[in-house]
Amino acid sequence: MDANSKTNEDVVPRQPSGFEFFTRKHYFPPTWASHLNPIPSHVFSLGHLPTPIHKWNLPNLPNNTEVWLKRDDLSGMQLSGNKVRKLEFLMADAVAQGSDCVITIGGIQSNHCRATAVAAKYLNLDCYVILRTSKALVDQDPGLTGNLLVERLVGAHIDLISKEEYAKIGSENLTNTLREKLLNEGRRPYVIPVGGSNSLGTWGYIEAIREVEQQLQTSTGDKKFDDIVVACGSGGTIAGLSLGSWLSTLKAKVHAFSVCDDPDYFHNFVQGLLDGLEAGVDSRDIVNIQNAKGLGYAINTSEEIKFVSEIATATGVVLDPVYSGKATYGMMKDMAENPKKWEGRRVLFIHTGGLLGLFDKVEQMASFVGNWRRMDVHDDVPRKDGTGKMF
Ligand SMILES: Cc1ncc(COP(=O)(O)O)c(C=O)c1O
Image 1 (cartoon, rainbow, N blue to C red):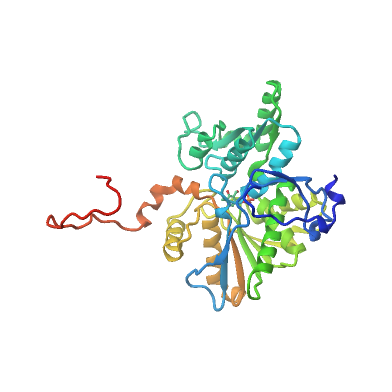
Image 2: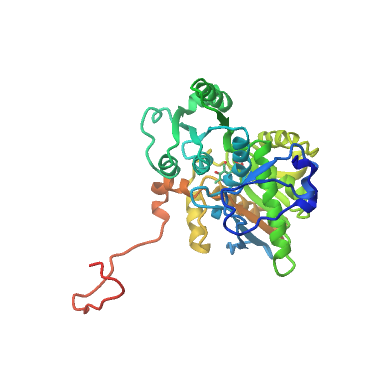
């Protein structure tokens, strides 16, 4: 049946039976998004959703500002983070097209490539990832740090490319080159763009807004959010969040902190995604984008790394330094510089995951982590067994 012909009565909220995981279902959009076009016909259940929302007791907030945290970092382990929401739609399309493998592309520690590799294997598809690295490392074994360990464990085929080649050829031509090669070998590849950010992937965060709406409706007390804050890396997450928030009952202002390109680039890119859904809105009206790139994509100052460790120590929440770490740093800086803008507001920060990328930063983190010491015991402390007998 054509998904467009469904009515709101057909909308089935996510059933937390546990047996839904890995299943492909017909997709029915929220009523407020039913005018968008095209509407995906199917969706896979791949994430551990809904993700929890809890109050985040950040230090030094402006007067009466509350920050709440949506834990998309808890959307699964190997599939963790924001990418799984996009993959629920992209993988459903890959399967509908009869593909036998997927191709995608990103940086050497790409969370998206790792999540895609895992999702593909869950669905019995092969995965080919093109990973961008430095010229000095492109001819070497990429190692097993962070995302690479998971990617390689699940058997993804890795093609390394240098940053210079990537910049010269572009991600689209690189994935197409690999696609042609695989087609010639008789394979049926499905190409997923950088970060899973296309109009189809945008549905992932349109759905996340429906999820937040439902969480607010079922929570006790009169809760609402004035602002949503999130990191922006390839643009798909903010496209879905800002469109969803604009169309739904949420109407929260979306603030994006860009960790790579500048705000103008992202406004134009997001506009393309919105136009691809015939949304009829201007990206500049629905999302505010600020630069939080700092030294550059995936490069951190010591101050940012120290900030990540201070937030972990103060709140127990571990941020990844590449995305949510920079976004939180940017948000807190803005709150310190413009407290009036944030006073009295209830903010929902979306933690988009990326914790595996943290392993790539251990050296830089080393001087900021908690202390240790050799336990001081005297020779005359008598032995008394606890549980188990390991020694
Ligand atoms: C952990 C994490 N957070 C945030 C983002 C940004 O999301 P998007 O690419 O949709 O802008 C990415 C990917 O780029 C990511 O891996």
